Image 1: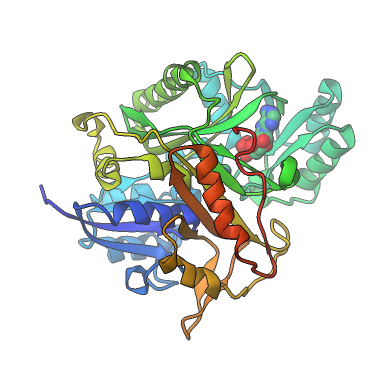
Image 2: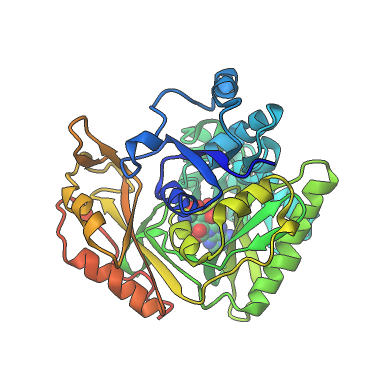
Length: 432
Ligand code: AMP
Ligand code: GLY
């Protein structure tokens, strides 16, 4: 076996910047390439835009480009996984850290995930699936509110409506079925009971048979303080989450991850990569699954990875080769980590672009307290750092306590004023 690996990392978010930050420290890394990357990556790491893609028509080009060049492909986001990039790698015998298209349906189709949970006896909200407006709307009227309406397919985090009024539900169903707001992702709709409790994200690193649970994080999905405003991809997170006690983690292992991996394995479709378990935890520490994702969460990962003391690249490589068992127990720090997301004014709706970020560029080399992970940033031709996305940067700190970690992040951010941006001021307040 080769001693060092050439690695390709797919994705462009803060999550991928954090993954790169961890694996660049690995003595097992020969070289890293990133596609498409963002303004935070050194330019020599980045494969230029337009070279790779994940539409079915891109398959041959993708395989021709990576063949013989890489020993491992790590996939950050869900889109390439749902499209089948892991299968493309497997066909040309390159290990891939990420599930096959079949397994990625666990995120790509809410109906698939619900059926799987039923089969595996995984605790989750009661649901029904519909494929037209009339029957779904009459079901909602019978059930009453609160109720949750979910477009079946990928919808960039916008496909779920938690309805507290019937009118809201009617509008959501009309948008899905009549306006076809989500295109083919809205051909079916999953309608499920509203769950009460506190949410948490757990990442299981899976090799098809065995798995490792990383410490639990809590995300902040709403745009504004006090959990107000529209849902976003996530405005901040912290780790570990005090709510995830031993009882919670035992349920995640025994009642959720193990049975799901078992079903995939028995049908000859072993699940390799991250299984993201979105939990609702009630006041008695009983858990139910709100959603599965086939990848790491963003921004939770940026905090979680700061607590992993072992070689992340080796963990990914062994998982991708079905060999997690060969690793000793993964060392996890007892510290805490947190991330605050800096977003562009208007996000998650239409947001301001091309915001000048030179203050953060300078701060990167000046500040030891925080790590700055880039998300929606680009470098202009003359080398200036500009915003290009809604979530621009994540400010991350690891400290002995959560209070200290959050404090350090806020003292960094509060000392800077960047026009046309905003961030939540209450990340982690619940845990404190
Ligand atoms: P999902 O994409 O399925 O995670 O849903 C997005 C968000 O909607 C979740 O993070 C929850 O905040 C909320 N949500 C989804 N399903 C439910 C449910 N059954 N009960 C309460 N809230 C839910
Ligand atoms: N932060 C939520 C997600 O990655 O889906």
